[in-house]
Length: 286
Image (cartoon, rainbow, N blue to C red; front, side):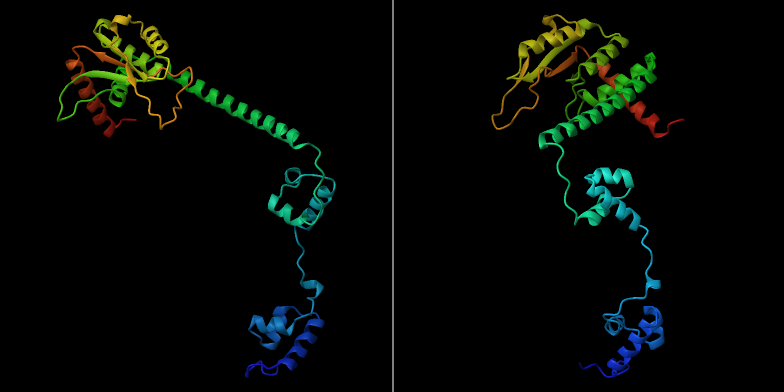
């Protein structure tokens, strides 16, 4: 074997010294410093085949866990069970026991699936219960709205969902459209607060042509407590055969548009009130 000239030229002689020191119980660092070998690759070659002394071996804190994991695996425990029992990661468990035979299945795939489904259903039920508790607590925290609170709420509701003027198309119409029955109810309560007579309201049902149009018309008429004479002709959305409708359940009733006749003055009040809210929000007082 040939070596580059220099401090490691007498490689064989250097190896004899390194081996002697190793067998005398010195660590790699001690041998490195004693022989002035700064190159790790050279040091590895000098000590090739020589085991480290016992005193340099650090105890592994996970040795006990590893042995326990292997013992449990041999008893037929799953990774999940071992993880819960020992508190270590599945990746570590996998490394420790991968040479051991897999435990025999105690359940058929169908039984295992049923067990998993029951567990997931229980989890979903708990989540839904927590969701409902949060919603109910928030609902109770609202309490009774004052007239001012309802007024401001209605202005914001209209500005989000109602028809608005454009600088290039001044119409000042008050028309509110929504598919949520609760939004329709709140909007009507707001109109009542403002003293808008029900006789000034006109309604239009807007719905997909393939839905149950007659049932939807009856539903909205009952919801707002209006006679069918207050309803304009229903607007039907044409079906596009290239699309797949998702709103096909019995609860689908389209949208309801509420228009206030002679509503120009009301529209101006809504717009002015909205910008008053905007101004106040810029410097809120807490």
